[in-house]
Image (cartoon, rainbow, N blue to C red; front, side):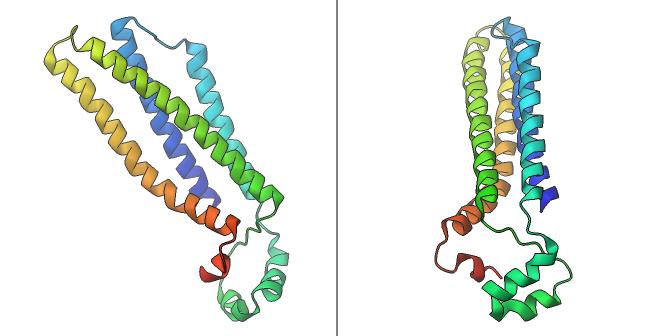
Length: 182
């Protein structure tokens, strides 16, 4: 699970960085609103910090393997035989640290999405200006690249939404939400 979480975060942040690179390419053509190198490096630092911190916090929120069977015996005795037959499983208790991990990850996700929206708004503003300054063929290439990145980002989001929904269903505690998934 930790590797999957890391890959999902890395994939989304990499896509956002692709938008940053495209933004810089269009801005350099217009000599308009090119982000200073320190801003680009700050974004890179934020994404690296987010990735490392969320993965680190998530890896620390797993229940101690020695206590997992005891937890199942106490909370889900009807499933003990099923768990005993599993060669490998992890239990994440929705304690304060786990909730803090989820809230931190969601906050970083919202900040990343806000950064993406700002960059996209500026890209589309620059494309409107660029349309009058370059050939129609070059304009279409830039526009197609942006829409291609947006399609890739939307496809990547399909991977992220179901796990986030699942975590919130478990955290909110809808009647029997945890036991229904075993």
